[in-house]
Length: 430
Ligand SMILES: Cc1cc2nc3c(=O)[nH]c(=O)nc-3n(C[C@H](O)[C@H](O)[C@H](O)COP(=O)(O)OP(=O)(O)OC[C@H]3O[C@@H](n4cnc5c(N)ncnc54)[C@H](O)[C@@H]3O)c2cc1C
Image (cartoon, rainbow, N blue to C red):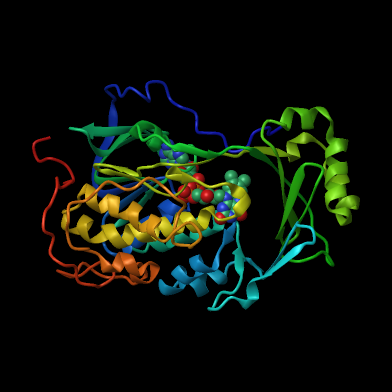
């Protein structure tokens, strides 16, 4: 039985109050990225391409988890294309979603094939495969390192600046010191909790039941769904199976379970009549997982030495199927804005604030934008120093070696007029 999907990783005793540890290793890097989801893996790849030393820490031993989305939007494919990786990715098994029928009355069909560009479809690929691909690409660069089974539990702080993390691995505790720590550890972000940055809850009215049923030849292709009886049922074509996401009112799971599996089978059949013959495949509740949906955002994504991205900064509802898109766009903006100051050792909190600002100016409905959020911290009047970041993914996508005076995307930056505290990798004295 798997009643609740994707729970936070179990906390270790003493996690909130760091205690002296017997450390197996103490290492230093420029950027320590915590969490190898889409945001972390993409950020690490983009930084490694620009020769920034980056250490990516992932708590799990592999990427094979069910409770993740698998839709790669055209904007992501565009980024990969600019990196020269789209065609390689598309050699892996995937499906192309060109049409989706929304369960409205009457049904609304979205025809993605009319979109401009090389990728007028949503690429459906298990997220595990996508992450394997990104990290394998990053591993081609000597400045990249991935540590699996590295469960980050503590922030190292000095004079209110985050200086790195401590993680627990099967062989014990390890310490990583870094000029910048990036929390991309998802919707139950440990880094966010440890940082003290407080989220604003924006929506928590639904939960989702997650299950699969066989897909047969002659079924519709792409995505479809049905609505009624207080539920919405979304179906995503995964080749031989349909991934079903049933949206239910928050907190109604015990009642729904109490009504029995037969009632669930009947509801599915009523919402999607052509599934009737297949609902018998639901033999017990272990085939049904509950995803407790939250949606929130951090008004402020950063502290000195620390930046949060992806779901760690703004948990996305899975219903919109857009979380990966946003996570990747965050990573691109961060790499565009931070690669150069990281390489030069001149990173300041302004650079971190610029990442959040960059992700917010585009507005909620732009693939580059993310919702509304509090005004980022004011910056003293200074020239806009990173045109590459304004250019979006294109600038990030091209590998730019650390040419003196060159931007991450190869654009020149105006001189900095005033520099706040520089977040150096680690004080010489310590
Ligand atoms: C059921 C479900 C369905 C979804 N469907 C879609 C969809 O179809 N399309 C879509 O675009 N989005 C979908 N989403 C949302 C999408 O999966 C997320 O928005 C996206 O994965 C966020 O990426 P991320 O890199 O920020 O975080 P995550 O993908 O959550 O990655 C975080 C990583 O950090 C690791 N981690 C966590 N804690 C630690 C720690 N302490 N130390 C080290 N590592 C740690 C985790 O193991 C994980 O690998 C869905 C989400 C859910 C739950």
